[in-house]
Image 1 (cartoon, rainbow, N blue to C red):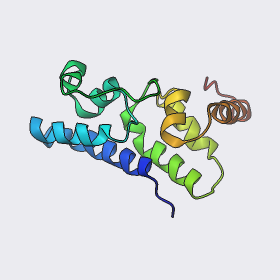
Image 2: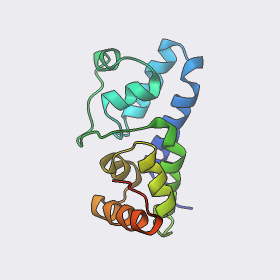
Image 3: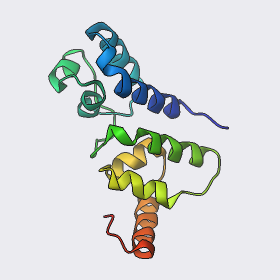
Length: 138
């Protein structure tokens, strides 16, 4: 299994999201600062993951990643992690997992950034899956 730095960042994001209610502000601060080092998430997305306000996170000096955001649903992190692992291990792109990530409310842009799958490939796979399954996933 090939693990890259982004997978570790995604796993840290999942841990933060699932355990934030048990963390005090100092622990949340350390978790957000650590997670920001991966440059995967915007301030707004870090806010979603941590439960803290955008202004609190921005006040800590957290900077935006070089690429923009996109709609993001933290509840789909397991799916996004699995898509990333599949790509890293040379497996074909799983259209059902990808469709699930879209149905969960994630934009193509955020899926691309977090999984490493190109935007055009995502669009093609989603379009084919929608046609094959008779659903509208755009």
